[in-house]
Image 1 (cartoon, rainbow, N blue to C red):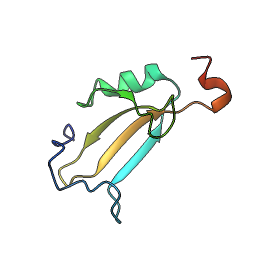
Image 2: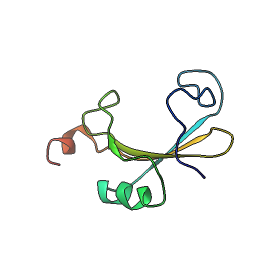
Image 3: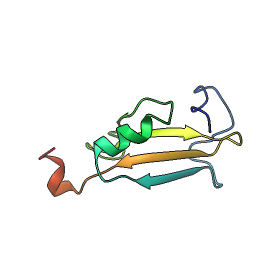
Image 4: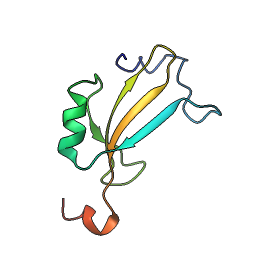
Length: 80
């Protein structure tokens, strides 16, 4: 596994058809941070998915992204 490629890379094609992304739910933000220790891309909140969607990524040699994410239910999100 490698850190994700630069934004200009054409290997991962966001929004295109094909198997190129796998998200794995984590039990907490701390779990995303722990998994990030073996990943390269800094974890952050991705508000385009939800106000509390927190994730980090790694990418293999074929450009397939593996995502570690924490996305609490809406009713718990404001309590975090």
